[in-house]
Length: 79
Image (tube, rainbow, N blue to C red):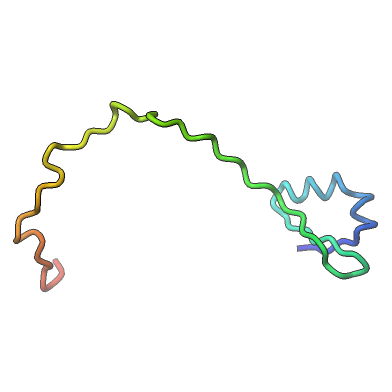
């Protein structure tokens, strides 16, 4: 993380933006005091499309039937 004064940042802005886009974090300072941080934007996620997997997921008719009592008991020793 590098700290750069605003005057120098104005002169080299395009290079600083390239560095930030590559993953570097740059602190912008005024008179040696940090005032802002230059970082890359996170990529935007595509909008979700409802029903995209329709017909590809099957839920069994008995998915909510209670389990056998011996299955729900926790084992006393690891296998």
